[in-house]
Picture 1 (cartoon, rainbow, N blue to C red):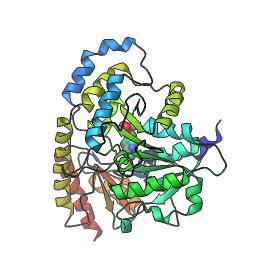
Picture 2: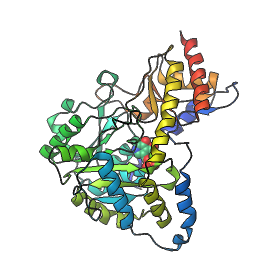
Picture 3: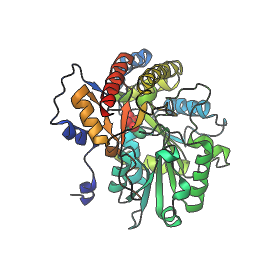
Picture 4: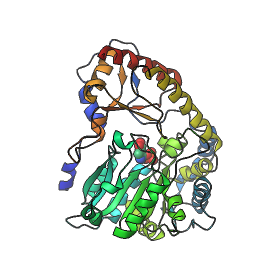
Length: 398
Ligand SMILES: Cc1ncc(COP(=O)(O)O)c(C=O)c1O
């Protein structure tokens, strides 16, 4: 057996299940705010596309995906991140992936040079796949903390020279899961400069980029930062995007990677063996989804309403504010996060995720401690009920 498998931690939801095992809530009706699975309706026109193209199931898909899909992705990227018309070539700069999860994981296998001191940097707290990707690619995960005092953003100035020298890949997550913080274009440019100086790859997980609250200021992305600072061929830069959150299509497993064409070329070779080509039916449905923004704006509106309602209810009892983007509230809890999550479930039948399940000890602290993650994915009325129950629970702590 691959000994690196032993390094994988139980997934946070297994830990959560164990935490809740002895509880027996009396309140009627369980509400789960623990899982980041979108619950709004999938767009009807995407479902129509799937229904109308089912006969395509009798074909093997190309790993590279249909050119129409890659064209749709390039058009979307150009419009969304205000890239120049010549910035991306659909033949060279993009690849469809079967959801960003498998891509974030397999990417490290493709690009880590197996040396004893190889590091993959990642935020802390973090999306758990990054750590597994590091272990299974033979690298060591190295965490950079994103803490309250720093608005839950990375501080690249804190990372020392030796770490940058050993860094082969850095994962960034913007908007962040679980923090909701958005890395500014200025910070992204700073990171691009560091990647040029020390020659490492930036893997920018942007799968929450379309869930934001001000139509006039969408979160910045790595590709626009690269173009702005003159890195017009996106050297060392790769972005990961997904239809899961943007279009409420998590079951379709549709996303893409885009950026540096040398990296994309190698990753295509890797993926030919990896074998996660997107089914033809899903490719056609994805084209429809990337070509439409109306449903994405409507989706954002639903989250805006939920955040407004939930924050309004919670504000009198706990320090809470609208995140930069995404669909999570990252609450700083007045008691230990495991106790908070367990007692909240026991007393109010609401499940939230303890922050420490999403983080590791690094630099002597565990930045997920005393935090819980609330995913506002349930319908508005359920989110309101959950917020009222959380309020009741918090009142018992005073
Ligand atoms: C930060 C982050 N990245 C990537 C993913 C994977 O999304 P998908 O594989 O559905 O594209 C998730 C899913 O929850 C996530 O939270």
